[in-house]
Image (cartoon, rainbow, N blue to C red; front, top):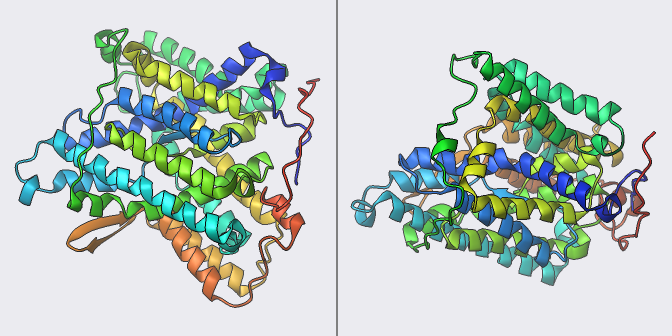
Length: 467
């Protein structure tokens, strides 16, 4: 097992106040992307059909359920999945048959019914892995496949970081520089909460800029407090039960093929980041069950699909605090915010530029993890086979920016760029001769990926002293 001497694996040594602050940092990291999904879906429908409060409580409860299914071992946060956005847009545009007279709210319910089925497909793959064994599955995912996929996970989000940052570059740079300063030169607790410090300091700067009459690059106001003023202090999430329609299921369910591949990539990324074998223990089948059921339960009550979040993996890499309890605290924050609409709006008022500045670091860290995955496993790029696999993965993962849409039984289905990259990479690795990596046979190389077949080792959990 590839252990990290400076890692904190039991956050209780920090004390409850610091654990609460670390949880807050994870909550800020996931918040922007999580609430962006309902915002985008509502823009497709032209009205508020996918509610932010429902999205938040489903993310929080889904994360806790995932931790339960994975034995409380995996430090992963489940937020809203972007992979299903194409499916939502497709169903909204349907105007024939039963959809001709259907309201937008009912269309969303049908879309959620399709997501319920998509989540249940995770259980099928989990069953196969449980029967066949993780070794037989992971032999199709050597470092030459998972490394480039992890790199693509970060780089595919780079455009989002730039777009957000470009709305107000001074604010984005304040957030980015603050994170770098606290991560490199911070002392004690401040060194492990650079993301939170970046958010707090840049938010304070934004308030000063706004008070001074400065605006964003497009001339718009930095803050709009209208939604905060109109929001209630206490409110119950507006749940709505899903409906099942075969056409909607045919649109949404196949997307699970993509998100399952992304899940495996995320589990590899988290394992490589933390240095623990989550693929083997608690097992890929258990993490798939947790992710799939969390997705189905969310959609059952009118929420979006859930997925493991790369943003929080970036926070793990920066903070070196790997205790899953901190992630569960962030989940509790999300649940609490779902009942406090005004506070959710306060956090939601965070300027896009700040999210962009933070994303510069988080998305870059994810890609850097992929690079490390390739380097530590000594992937031989003098071999044409490995160059072909990595090259095609990069082009697919970064080139299909809008995904790939095709028609099945008269229904439009969209695969995301990452799912295309994962599927093509796995197929090329399976058919091209000269495979130079075999999972389970080289413990040192598996260890570098956090995927060795040895049992997890207990590590010294004492808090490292900061000079």
